Image (cartoon, rainbow, N blue to C red; front, side, top):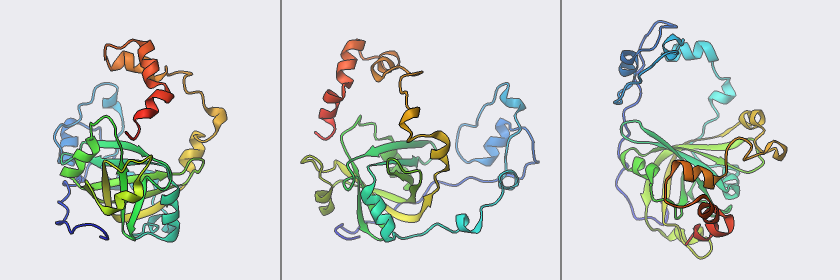
Length: 258
């Protein structure tokens, strides 16, 4: 890995799901879920969920959804092409999915100006910058227990996305941090990802949702503004007026990199 001190092999992953041969349409029970997954905490279903017809095997899923065409099934690659590099240079936003050793998941958004969010180390390795935040670091704790990550990179206005799956490690400093400086600040750390699978995802979800159509936007039509939500579900002792001031973009933006 160019510019990095050699590291020991990445730790192994958590165990995968174990499929069971259940009859088609058989109602799911706690015992069923416990037999299918090695993770603790079987799902407890209550009415009306007990009457649902569930899908419990890969064969059942394939029978319902069908099999992918040859192009979709084989579009995954293991190394970056020039178009992938261009996409990563243009993206200002991604969502990183992780899971801990017990399978508990997290999906964390990351954002930076294009060209500063992602750094390409080589054709099979990328780094994603971390900036000041709420310090929960849920996803990074997951990576320490289970290195597997799934990432979706977006470009505003585009329906297609670039997906990367791979194995990650946390890096606290490296020469390439100098190329990810924003407003005079280097990243706090970087998530370095060894690419195992990369492919473009089609635009159907964005077309169905109309996500990039401004005429469909009405952010407070059903959901109150951020200050009201924070006051209701995240008690801090601050009034709504104080929270409005705190979350005012002109004020909130002051802590994005400092």
